[in-house]
Length: 363
Length: 206
Image (cartoon, rainbow over all chains, first blue to last red; front, top):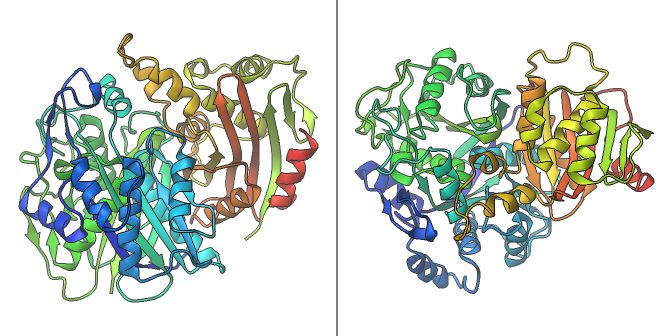
């Protein structure tokens, strides 16, 4: 199905800032909150992660009148409120649908967080919960785009992605030997694994209007392994292929770049197979860590900020090419001419063999 | 856009049906015991099955029942998608994983952790059948035929998807399974995939 939807409002909340602008600045300046945590959540082995200062977030939420909620719900409501305000829509209108993207929510059934969100904004439709592993945020955007193009009864969709870290998630990734004890190094020859991160981010989508548009997006399965990517990059390649031919104004691809040995190698192969090896690439997990259910939305929002400023973001942690196929990324920011139209692709992969790719364009 | 039902399948405690017919006589087995009995009855040889959580086991059994008559199985297909809905997601496996990270018994299990995602069942079905199309998992607050039909039909708007394993699959714990899963075909000739059809089948075979 062809057809675009427009981004009318956005928000991003991470340990680095409460707005898309602050988070974009952090990436540009190489600031990160990735640090070693010992004993956090009662986890026995130390781990490096980007975690919220919960008091700071609660104070910020209080300004919006958001209080008395669990921490996960607090960041969901704060991100949604900020995006809704920017878009200037009435969230309780029958014309508005909400979509929540998360993997573990606050540990309780995911549908209970959906109810909190729905009740807070007095939503007229049940909140759709997308839980598609680490690509959940992109899945939610793919799903929301189709929803807007298919449904006559709604005009706006609020897509919120959020993740908080926990003993459950951290010990799980430790058991898989996937975590690095130092800030991660996407695509680097010395990469030692991923870092987990916390964030929430939201966009409001509409059918019309100027600004950033989601032109196409797909989800593809590797059909290979539930917890390891395909050696041939099958799913990511197929997801990218659905967006080809690449638009002439394609400025960069914001890749998954978890800094695990297998993921980054797989992505380098998928990019080469799709004929995109020359396109500039950036990876953001050396700044935010892997924010799981928030990643697709957060990384898209930060990429929009960069693209409209004519910037290809630096990849923090990267210094020496460490994949078998060349990938066009840099440890410092690069510039391009963004005076005309501009596009970028957001790419992610996750457990269960899922891969997602979404094309964003701005006229 | 229309989507025709090629086959449907119900897996519930004490019940295993394909298109309204018993797949096997169930003697009151429930949950994972029922799924293991179905595995044997279907004559499957897929040892990975026994490593899976209840939700993925249910997904494998449902997809085997739905696809058993298909020609040219196990060739890579990018036009085949898996889109499933549940209420409890992977909570049955979450409980098991949590037991491995208590203070008294701290030995986090990677084998359990990898199933603590609601979408892994869609991945297991994709892996078994070499489906390289979309795979997506949604969590609903209840069995909601209208929501299932709406999102499923929207998913057919993917540029390549022609065939889909779609529907409801829910395992609150190891002793309970509730699945109503469909094999759908875009613009197919079978009965139209509608909330009325889901509702009727679900009620008729309670």
